[in-house]
Picture 1 (cartoon, rainbow, N blue to C red):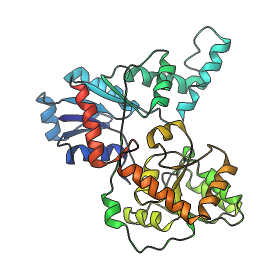
Picture 2 (picture 1 turned 135 degrees about the horizontal axis):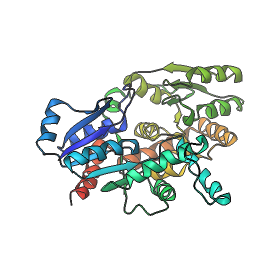
Picture 3 (picture 1 turned 90 degrees about the vertical axis):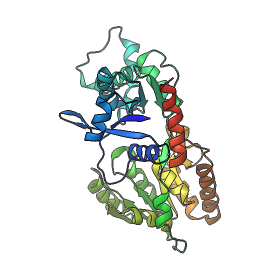
Picture 4 (picture 1 turned 60 degrees about the vertical axis):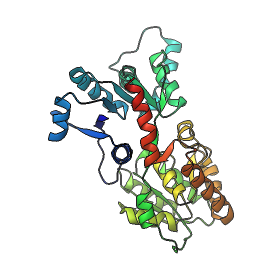
Length: 354
């Protein structure tokens, strides 16, 4: 297939899931991926991709996230090809939708769209309305499908689970058999509010003998988190951006990792047979099943107990790590190595061509 992909903006420091999807589709699916990059002038393609599009040789358009669907619809108005659209409800607005329920308890008329307290609701409702125009719809799980239908007040029809990719080649390249495990835990992700790194720091401050905490990644919360760790007396090392080799080695030398929002970190840990502590959230469970080691969401005392439990039980860590690896390798979750990821996506795209 010749597939136009509307590419999301990323910092480019690490390969994001859409980049991995595209590489999987090219490498294992034999598809031609025409990457559309958003600019002020519109979507920009390479000269080779432009010739394929102008030659009417495109099979379908893929919008891998909801805020890209409007661009896909604009492109469809020119080339009239089916759209595969995905809805994941970007943070932080996914929780703000629920505030509308209380509004309708007291009023009969729709709220003023210009009032800031309803800005998120209308923003995400707009995304759902655009999503409902896609020919084939993918979703993270039923939890998000219900939120879409809640915003619309209508059913969205049949949806497909969008797989999540994991590239194991870097891990095979950099993993070391003789690396010594240290008494430390780690996180590797962007330092933004919804990752809830403050919860981890607070949990460590509640422990009598906490492990060292290594934080890899950059983001707008980095300085505040460093200050917070110092205030609480937590032994935290902030390494900033690290290389792929350093990332693999950090995971190997740590007893386990933590990730309260995001699906790549638990998958990375699983491939190295390491546990990853996650808050239990419906969308995380729908994506990863029992791959992570769950603790009650937003319960910092419970988080501290979970950290302490894994720190003090070598055999439990080993058992959890091996179980997570088995689930990943045998496709017992919606996260897959690239070859299987390409296979799953191709099935969805084929539905768009029927």
